[in-house]
Length: 208
Image (tube, rainbow, N blue to C red):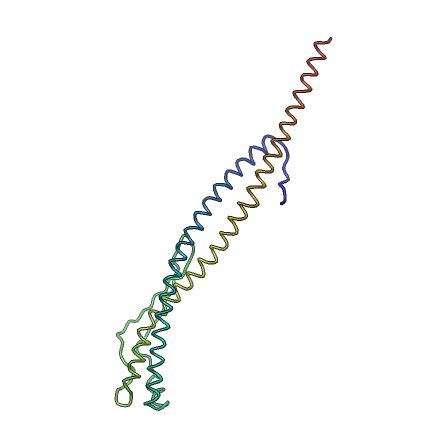
């Protein structure tokens, strides 16, 4: 482990003790922050798992309905029926903060009510079910994207904080301890040397 290159003076010793106290306080604050981020991260991961399972199930149901629709309709009829969207949709994004970490906040805006974008004369009930299922799936996908990105941001920040905590705990604070011990030993040695010289000087003066 590298040692701090400092002069063995009382002023430097005082500065090192102050810096050590700040490092210990910062270490505690970052550990607390890391622990709280881990707690929030676990909560978001659980929510992400729930949303993903729901989205995959609904998507599978919608795809199954499309397969049934293709079996009872021609490819041209399906393509023509789906040329226009069921309703306009717009996703807006802004930033929110979780423990001072910027995370995305997505909002799905569907101004119009849902309506089938085709007539019912040449379409099947299976196609109706597939289109309806996908329309209901869209808000879930938007929330899933938001939660998943939040998980990624929290995971990155947890890793950065973990490295900082380890750097303080295993590098900086031990360096401060070692430097404080070294300077204290050197100052004690100088103090003993000065005391010895004073005693010898006193003996010499008394001898005269």
